[in-house]
Image (tube, rainbow, N blue to C red):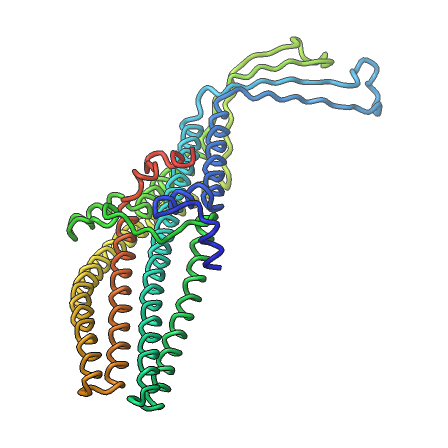
Length: 413
């Protein structure tokens, strides 16, 4: 699978992966359609200000004693123009607009989550490529050591046990590489499921994507730019709009009404125009009161949810920043360790030839050097993943990808 994906990949690098995800992932298209549906709902709410037309037609029977002069099919046409709804129409429009803005905030949240997932998966694949290279070098080193001991055995300078030990270590190195190859195939499949097209993750991530401010500025930026916080704040606005809509739902409406009558001789005029005040008090007003209480409780729920989200975000940012510092220190320490072990391995090889070190010492040091290199690669990859997560949380990729938080559909357009 790895080879197939490499052959098909026409896109390269992190930017290409993120762009592909935002333009091709079905979750983005689905959420964009949901935003459009909410826009239509808002437009429908505004039509309450327009006149309403209705028609009524009757089919009367011939039963009864006084039917000689009665028309068979009386009809009425009616037009109603709301003049004053005491805030009922305005509040329903405000609620529809709040729901649209909430859906747009949710759309931004989906985009940010996909950005974070794609960035961290890209980092994972990139790290596995580096790990694979270390293991390829490890296999090659063990092959070289096996050939060396094989030549010494042929010259009766080494025992068969040393050859078998070298072969065992070579098999172990090959098994470790095969396992990493399998992990890489799985990670490539995860990346493909996000981008929907093959993207090469071998190119390194540009430094500008991992440059971050200090912890204090980072949390401030995250709180200001977080899509999750924006969504929860918009839910409060929607809940408050729902309270107003519930309060005004039972308010009366004043209409300008025009009626046109056909085949109805009981009316002196065949057309009438007048003012109509219409009201509906469900459950003697108790239904509206209880609904208002329920809507008010939802405001409290939304406010507490926002407070909890801000608290979780602060904890996440501090945790990730501390992990980033730790991984950076670990990378530096492991780099020094790898450098020292590389020099020590060369020394052990010379001492083995001189007869002062055993073959087991050489093989053990080669394994230790490989493990240190793998740890170094892992620490570098963990640092990269944490940095990209923090970048996604603070909106660090928005400008590059054309995402504007105040116009959630800009990236799609």
